[in-house]
Length: 304
Ligand SMILES: [Zn+2]
Image (cartoon, rainbow, N blue to C red; front, side, top):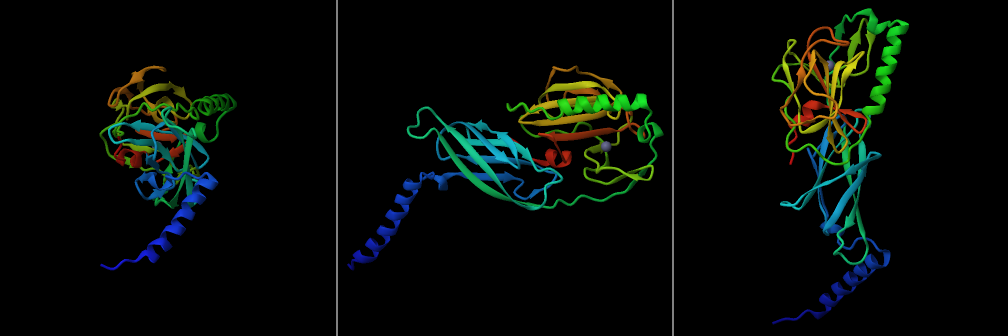
């Protein structure tokens, strides 16, 4: 039997030095044991994303920063996986962006009390159809009177206050369901023209439903808003936690009130054509920490 003591010793020395360096600089020695995945794996602007993390140590909590937002993770004990829903705003340019994770160690762990890890994700430009919709909207929406401007101002203040609220605790669970069973009449991200004037991109998903169709909660949540606003008409906003809201516009009737707790599939109101609408339809929007995301992409996500 041949022996090769020299190559073995040669390997040992650099390995020892590398390990020593890790300790010297205090970097996480077990960094290789972090597993960080994004669902869907290809990130695009305007889309929600589910981050799934396996940490090298038992943690009490896990947080992250992502595109300037704070993200709180939930723990799934059976799979030992931390998860959080986040998003990429429509305005985010393509590029490489880091998810900066910080975990608070379990009390049973000795040594340092927190661990951190960073992983970069590539964001590519999403494909959104540029459909030009020529609509004739009543002039009170394009050239409002002073009284109407006051109502618009009030609506903007209510939205500014409520729509950026973040409840870190997760209330959603499992897939987001369709709010109505109907054909889609306009997709997220399309460009619209009102009375010849180009408006901002369509930031929701339109369902072609007649007035009086039951509208269902897309997931478990608390009712954040249920009141009439100038443009939105009868408007319901559900808070699903982790900074995620779903918005339901132009309703003819409310079936919930602010503060109510609702289950997925529960009827929250009936469709209509109140507010700025050319006719009865359901406009649904998804907001994550102040940015609009594509509701269709959220409903496609398989979620824990
Ligand atoms: Zn719409």
